[in-house]
Image 1 (tube, helix red, strand yellow):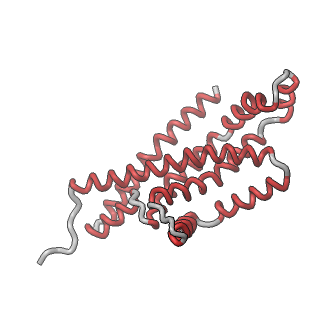
Image 2 (spheres, helix red, strand yellow):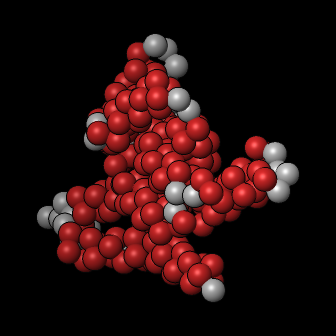
Image 3 (cartoon, one colour):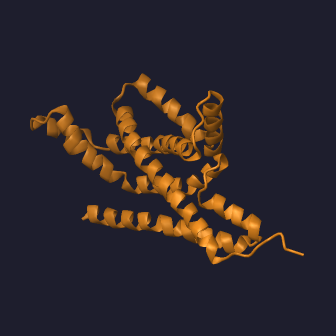
Length: 217
């Protein structure tokens, strides 16, 4: 009688590496887009009047408060219902990027607001225009100050990318779940998955620490 389950084999390596690549791809897309949008919206929050600030803050609170898995399901269902279904990668990238932006916005807003008013006044007194002050003073100092917080959000996004599997994206966790169902070897596979997540995340963490030390000199 043939067994319902088959053991792991070297032929599964390509399948696992596909999941690793998909995880890296969607994480990089979300971090890059989320960071750029976060810088823009964070600056708007730092510069806007109270009404605009409260409005933007309320919208961002929704994205930060509602669990990512619910956002993914609702967005995927909604675009399908209106007749414009998106592939798992595109839908997941959009939701994960906006989710990332919601957290990055607060990170960068804090950095921009942390630049002392006296420093900005001194720059203006030297003849700099508003935008020159922003470009040469607020952006360099503000972005430098938020590096540790940015790194924490970026590492969190890599792990949160596993939730995109709920809309059918074949990232690392989803591929491992299918292998577990086929092989019934959860311990070995999950240890391997954890190791892959470490391999993906550690270079970012290591480079961030090095850059932080270099900037402190």
